[in-house]
Every structure is written in structure tokens, then in C-alpha cells.
Image (cartoon, rainbow, N blue to C red):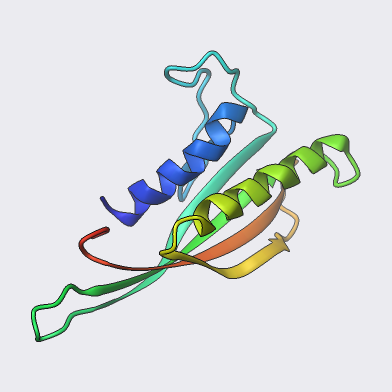
Length: 138
């Protein structure tokens, strides 16, 4: 399994039950979620990217050490003083908890606000560090 698939699975486990979509590098808009009756939440979405990696190989035949930084941006279209923002914060905390439950992930940079975008969305950024061997992720 590659790091993008692993990241997508973790995000889907938290977000899809809430009707929130996540995707690598860009926003994807759909009208329905496959195998779900939950409506798509058009006011929130997540975009993630693999920022960098440092892969190391060793001459003794042992598995390579893999390191990836995963940058996650959670976008929402309401004010921070809205009740809905508290729900979004709970989901952000659930994302952090889900990643940290996997011992291969560490929190590289905690929650920070994204700059204002030129559209109705605001955002919060989180960054994780994945450290593992190629037996798990390639």
C-alpha cells in the first residue's frame, strides 16, 4: 500500500460518515458518495498532499526507511463563531487522533489557520510525519 492510499483511507474513515470529501492535491466535487446515503457536505472539504519524502536504503539487505510529510488542509465555508465550526474542530481532532493511533505517524505541525482564500472558504492546516519501512508502504 502506498502513502497516498493509506492517507486517503484514514481521512475517509473520519470524513465520509459526515459527507465530507477528501482528495490528493485538488478538490473533487461529486453529487453522491458511493455506497452511502449521506448527502455530500458542500460546505467542507479536505485537500492533502505528500510534501516531501526521504527514503533510505541500507547495504545490509534490511528494509528501506521511509519518511513522508503529509500536509492536510481542512476547508470550511462558515465563520469561526458559528456552531458549525465547533463540529468542524471535532472532526479535525478526530483526524489527528486517527493518524496518531497509527504509531508510524507523528504530528509534525499542529493546527494552524490557512491564509484567506479568494473564495468563501477558510481553512486549517495540519502536517504529519510518516516513518516506516517498505514492508508497510512503498
